[in-house]
Length: 108
Image (cartoon, rainbow, N blue to C red; front, side, top):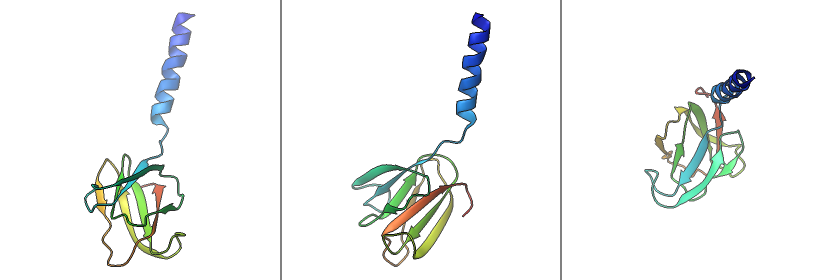
């Protein structure tokens, strides 16, 4: 019976590791993921405020970041595909960026 329980626990553990997790995204006030740190938000397609921020960091996975000129994520300025693994993305588009979305998946 112990072997069966151990197998069940092992199967659940392996399943949890195989299921893609949502990436956490942090917006920063500095150009190199420095300065004031914003909230740690999920990479789930939600529109987040980016006012007074200049860089983004995606904690893990290959994900698509889209940045927008307005605060409601409708006027797209740029896309950054295959982001993740803790890399910093300096958002320097030449136009104000006031919101962003992160979607799971490396291609935009």
